[in-house]
Image (cartoon, rainbow, N blue to C red; front, side, top):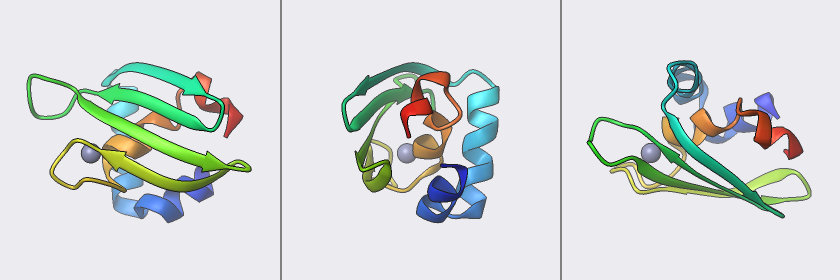
Length: 87
Ligand SMILES: [Zn+2]
């Protein structure tokens, strides 16, 4: 999975996402069959809403309410979370 997300967001955002996770910026995370929904604290007071769509444990698509819209560090920040183990 680490490789999948690294390919999805790229090396830079992957490592930024990791430090986001380690710094406790993942405010919430919910797993619904093949969708991971999370909220990640970014540079604004309100956390960003992140959605990762999966199919057969592969990342199909990601989206985020930050200016990057998708494939960002907020997406990567959800992956080390224990609930993301299904991926
Ligand atoms: Zn984002």
